[in-house]
Length: 186
Image (cartoon, rainbow, N blue to C red; front, side, top):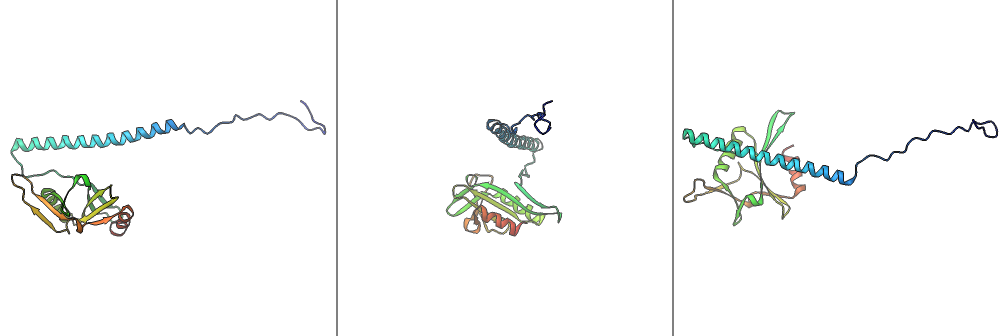
């Protein structure tokens, strides 16, 4: 063992290996995000496939017993308050591309309107139709049970159209929709 002048020990300290933080490289992170996105879209496609399969079975059952007085509909979003243990609202979500817009009016199938209104009245909750227009960066919002509707008879068609005045829908940007949710839903 070497000693320095003055009698101090000059032992070499063991060096700890220096490690770089292991974060993965950018390519790995990108691949992970792409896989998560793929999983998300795969789930959406599987959900759609399941809906189609169920709808097909329903139609086969209807044909088998010659019973056509029912319809198959879905609710896009259900808002439930756990603290109050009650439904707060229902939402039907549409994009501008899914909605017919003619001469200042939104049009939907009458059967969907009838079911939507009946469900809202039965459950005693507001049922909002929310239409997204990405080009204009706007949302159109209305409580379907409170908006005046006009039924248009379609010749040779099984279903009629329900026509709503676009001016009766609130027009909100993203921030406005958030504020509306805070005020009316939460």
